[in-house]
Length: 615
Image (tube, rainbow, N blue to C red; front, side, top):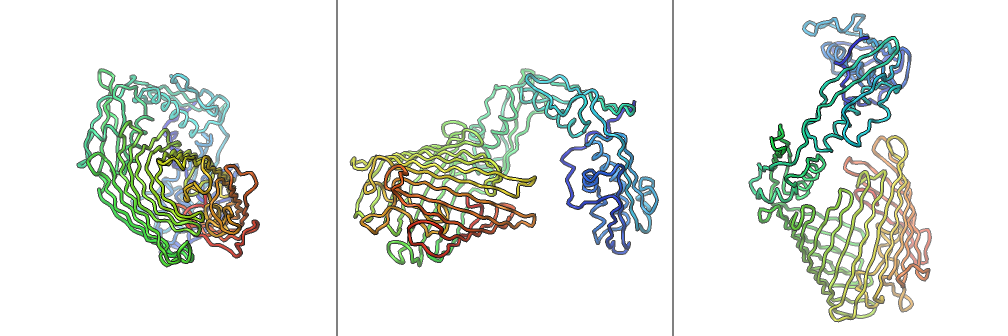
């Protein structure tokens, strides 16, 4: 029996796979500048392609074999470090009787001095004999937290992987912390190997420490946000049983305000005599004011110019004030009046943790003109509401407002004032918002409205649902599906506000058809919006290791005059192909689409360019 401990705790995160594959007997040569060419030979007994790949990926000598700027000291230092690195790979896979030899021009690297390295090195030979695979004999971690269970991989008879051992200990420690014991640590560790029976015994004893409650919270670092507001936004309940998840959520709340450049929560080194664990919060303020501007040009919609100004900490409460303006349709050939520009000016105030730690207050006002093919609209809005963060994946906002508008439609001119409510939820379980490969996304919206004069009272409902299925280890192949459904009840098309009606066509509904080209025909020829909408989209996305990708897609859209898609409306079907380039923060998107079904005249192709996937 041989006791080992020094090499067992190699973090799994350190084992990063290298794309180069070194097989037994493979020789790589490269220029080493003044040193000359270097031969690198890797052999394993017994041979295993998977193990060879992992050893080659972990060895520091691997990249030196193709580098033009190395010297003998680099080769020697890398070789001497590779003993430990290669053993860590072998231990992770359960090989505890292995031998590793690294020879530089026939001399064992471990016996050479880095103070006086060889004048030259021309050949590196790595020889690994794995020996037999070891299994767990004893596999014990104690005591365990209530309801805590060890993973099935950490059990007698399973492969004795140090990665499994490490993750099992970390899991047991995390379970105790989740139960309110912040100072739990591995106390005694006993690891032995039996080479006769190829068994590895692991016994770990945990020192749990004391049950702790949240103690006093102190704040430092901020010169602009009042400490009491920082504590209110944190939402940490003094006296509550300690939970690392609660501290993580508190840190998220502070970051969400956008008032701080950095946020660090530090637990006290010791639990106080009364069982309280003090918490220190250190923050650094963001630059309080920020402004920006941008613009874009479209062949049919003209130029658009945007600008904003924002104050991140208006009253010392991490509250935000933002003014934003947009002028669009400059030089446009699209819309109800050729050359007429649209504008939208919005002011929005937000106060985090206004009513509760995860409930923000906001107030807004906006002025806008909208000029479409089927209507012109001048609109003013005042509103107040709350933004509620229920979980990391689910949040919603609810608001009430006053909307005053003057509009001109195919039905004539009208002026009205509405009391409105708005519920908008977001359920987001996607793995990545800009390039999702798995999960789903649902956004329901309910907009009730009441005319102060009683003529227009109704409800606009809409839901957008998306799901993603990735294939392969890297999920470079993805099937993306989207469904949209909308309905307006309570008002006729004539009495429904023009910008509440549903249209189809364009990048967000049916690609291949002009923007909002599908609606309801009135008076035999004029198109207006409808009271029901249904849309479906499917994409097959294929990304390549180079960062480029291709997409094939089909979109279907329907708009009807009635509140339900009863078949009385019209359908559009568009299809096309696209190209993607992954920038690291999201793909650049280029889609080309054409109509393949539908009764409206929309010949030709449409082009779409953007950041992120279409949905």
